[in-house]
Image 1: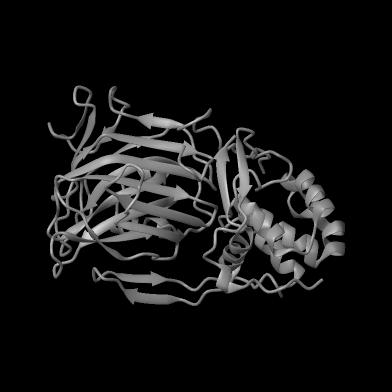
Image 2: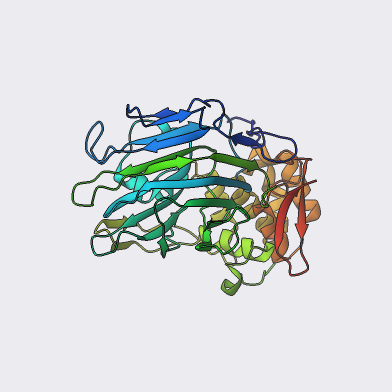
Length: 239
Length: 156
């Protein structure tokens, strides 16, 4: 049995944010589908996400893009903030979202269980939204999974052409918090909720945006631009 | 030694006590559950074996720690060690070297600082407080306990 304990503080260091992707350079973002739209554009300094509503590689094989942070985050404390996520398309019926996940989830398998309930079968904190057939397109339900609990279901009025700030915090080994706001300081949030995590969810190191393609469950896509993504490792308060 | 029950009313609080409640709940047995979610997916969660850490036997905790099929966080393992040291001080002293050799120094430290306090059990869920031996400590960060007992972790 190994005596080695992986130091979880290797993700970054020093004051302020541990990782900052402002897209002034291409940080080796990975897209699983080819598209002239799906890219990091260093001239506009934006990440362009353009997932598709068709299967890629087989049943339930969705389109996604992701990046590996290069090292694991603290298993008890980190902040992830996404700046100016501006959607060009809002699905009328379907599922999309983001997950902060461990290295294993970057394998091609991308099943519905992983996307719908990432924390129950994978090491990941999943934050997804979807629109059911009976809902209006703008009413997007936010779900967060971090283990066996489905902890939140709130109606979010996400609109196209609007800049949103997303913030997800791991406050302890078992507690997280997510906020969506149109303001940089996260004031007047559309959603601000704590949620329970399984403490065993650890080794998180990547962030992924994508959508689920599943027969009978709509054709959700995730299309839009992001200005910046930041991680602060080992803290529960944004720098 | 008897420890007080973990108050479920505190399970949503970002405090040492709240963390202790959440960690203790992860160890409890859970019945199988099946439901159809809003998207029509059938969700099956099998029954989970577990134990109540307030009342279980010493060997229940030893066996849980030894079971390599269970994925355990550092926080939850440390939590179990701390409760063991309080509830079964003699057994812990006599057997701790047989439990998990990765924790030798940590177990000595837990034993020396052991106290029957729910907050002390729950400290292990927070950054820089998981282990007493400093192995997971980041000197750039500090733990702040506010007047209302809530916890936040900031840069120094």
